[in-house]
Length: 174
Image (cartoon, rainbow, N blue to C red; front, side):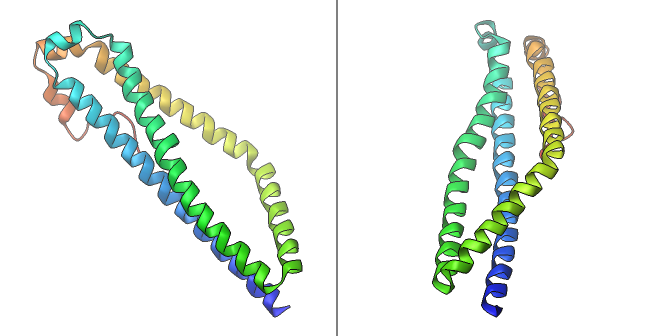
């Protein structure tokens, strides 16, 4: 029984660590996406006026918003998740089955049920977070649309210094 309690304690500790690492990974990848988007915007702003005569502003907006997000979510985040979760899962699996294979099956069943219960209970909360993310994306796109729709005038009047100010935020990274 003591071994089972120790194994359960280890599972709780390791799952807490996995959640913390997931939070750090998300913050890291979204920070990179933000910096990439800002670099792309600054790159566009530094282009000469003639560049914008041949470019579609909507295409530039889509590149900034979409490409940065795709890179962060599909490349960085996926790679980090595969490596970290794979290593943690292997260690947990080996440790539990070395100690007691029967207990390991029970612990996996209990934790799987707990995860399912938490998901069912938090489904509405997760949905509201998703809706908030969509609202924030709309605001990012609107800010970028306002910038890009006036980019020719900004270039013509050499008003680009405004967009280099620390207070100019395309979107928040939290």
